[in-house]
Image (cartoon, rainbow, N blue to C red; front, side, top):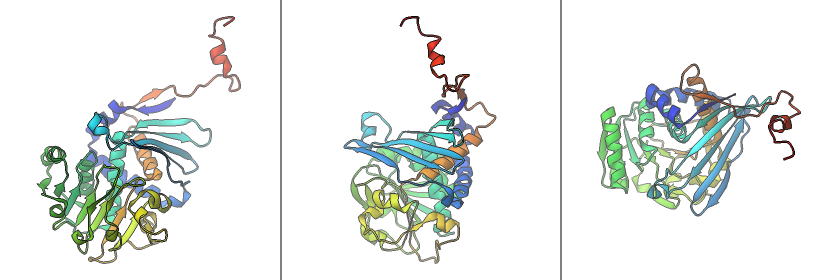
Amino acid sequence: MTRFVDVHNMVRWVAARGPEAIIAEMIGYLEDDYRRWERFDKTPRVASHTPYGVIELMPTSDHETYGFKYVNGHPSNPSRGFQTVTAFGVLANVHNGYPTFLAEMTVLTALRTAATSAMVARKLARPDARLMAMIGTGSQSEFQALAFRAALGISSLRIWDTDPAAMTKLVRNLVPLGFDVTIASSAADAVLGADVITTCTADKTEATILTADLVVPGVHINAIGGDCPGKTELDSTVLGLGDVFVEYAPQTRVEGEIQQMPADFAVTEFWQVLGNQAPGRTSTAQITIFDSVGFAIEDFSALRYARDAVEGTDFYADIDLVANPEDPKNLFGLVGALSPVGS
């Protein structure tokens, strides 16, 4: 049997445990897997691009467990009544190939993206960071806010979005949770005094929502909106202002902000910082940039965490996903005995 967490149970579990608590705990799983980064199979995600968006498969394995995520990204979906991003994921036993865990990952991906941003910021942002600017207040924004409060204690936000309804939505969701939220008049207004700048817009375009003149010494930029070829948020000059950190360079050079830069543009993979093989933040004046596109190992961590967290609860069901004949060589016997004679 395969353990299955559907949308209903995922939402029930998140509501019962609390998204902020889940994000805080998931950071620990992410850190554990980042510290054993070199043990994983790694490959850029397999993507199918269309004018409407992208569908991707994101596989990895630590040679005991195999995992993958199916995910789409369709920026125009909300205008048609659909989510921009939907996903599901699977864990399987490497030794026999059987799937052991299946889960919705639309909600789970939002939690893991936020947890990854917070894990990185805990190493790269200034320890005294207290104000975050958020440019883009769509589906990911509340999760990012909760993650940065959980990891860094940040509860003051300055926000900007071209969609006033999206900003109103964020205020409605976060103010009751204890956040101090200021609606800015522009991106330039939003970043005033910010210690952390999170950019998270959805349009599949080479946009420029943050320019070099808006970036001050000591800031940490959490750039999470550029995540496929032809989709960026930062002016290329911003990338030259500080040190750029990525998840997996071969994928980020194709999909991230650094797709704008020469192939030899210097970046640091974050696992090296966590493993003390490379420096992270080295001074209060240093500008740090996390060029995040999302990577399969993060989904693996999120699935491991969800699998372990729902153990012994009623937040999952066992489903009969794998045909299992008594005689492993007689698969036909499962259907042959039920087939009409002579059909």
